[in-house]
Image 1: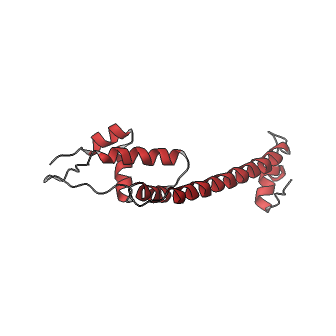
Image 2: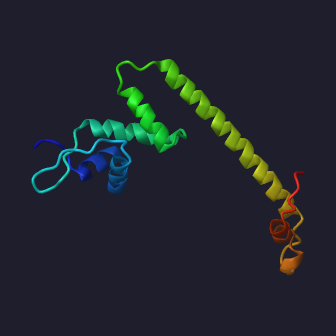
Length: 139
């Protein structure tokens, strides 16, 4: 039986063996045939899929989103407009997260600025006080 072992696939794709198993379990890559002794024998094309998955993760796509992208990339009838819309929606989601993180940073910065530092009893610490009482105010 021809094919590559899981360790060969992992090494050539620059991922961990457990990552390959996880992606297989999640349905991102197909379960390969096994030898009589139970070893997986992956086709060469799995390397391309694993690299696609890692690059898609690098730009912020979740594994569920990547599964859809893989289906589109392997479908001869796919339309690039759909992938464009998918990417634009992801950009909006990332922009919202950036906004939310900046807001959190600002609120935490305001609390930290009110903190007198070491030697302050916890009941006088503005960070603990505000988090305990839920009195964090939008600046």
